[in-house]
Image (cartoon, rainbow, N blue to C red; front, side, top):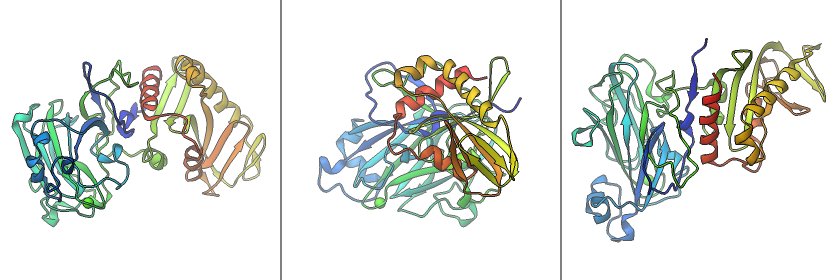
Length: 378
Ligand SMILES: [Ca+2]
């Protein structure tokens, strides 16, 4: 059986404005994100130095102006664009590595930021491991010698929980902080790394009062570092969750991908046929040869999932949309619909899935459906 991956599950959907009044549960994939707007209290507290935050009495007293949760090592889940100015932010939680080893961490931010990692699960033992004193232009390799990348790797033990804390101070213009990670022996160039999105990260989040109904922790992702979902990166980047290689009905029904995001829920069957894909309203031809049954199969799988998730989907008025992905289509931008079935080449299908104008599912609903689907699909 292929690796079961809840890719980015909770990981890539940003949740905002979750009230914090009831008991919290440890929530994989997310870090707590707190934000202060010091100029609200002192017009002199503007600038890009993280030490400015220590001059804000509300920061010192732990009274944030905003509390939220962000997907993975990235502030973009909360502030998706650069429209906020002069704030300070703190991201906190834990990292629980799945493989023992020495790791490098890479900080990219705007403006200054710091990454602290504890020697254990407590904030008391946080150690500053990476520092950026100003805005910068992305992750840099260890060899560059910039202190925003760890200059000596951090030793981590599998299964051990380490507290993490990131502090950011924004002045004006661009505003974000992101962190990538790779094993010290890793050879991926910093420029190719992505912010870590993984259930290795976690924080205490409050499931009450918001529809973040996490009753069971999702399984750990099997792609611990900078998980890539290949075909569907473009979807993940805009808040979709992608489940891969699942089964239902004691293995009788194979699900290549279940994709849940703002435009709905989709089951995708990946076809390895190469050639020019042509469609009519009810048939698919590859290099002129009709592929009978291709659409029928995925329609059946979609209906089966629809039925299984009925109690979640019915109240939303949403049903599972079937889709076919032609991995080796000669017409690489190909996209079409035949009946209810979306069809596309590797580049075309994600565009089609993303394409609906009005979002139908909010971030909390996406997370809830992802957790439900993760539980129901083997
Ligand atoms: Ca800035």
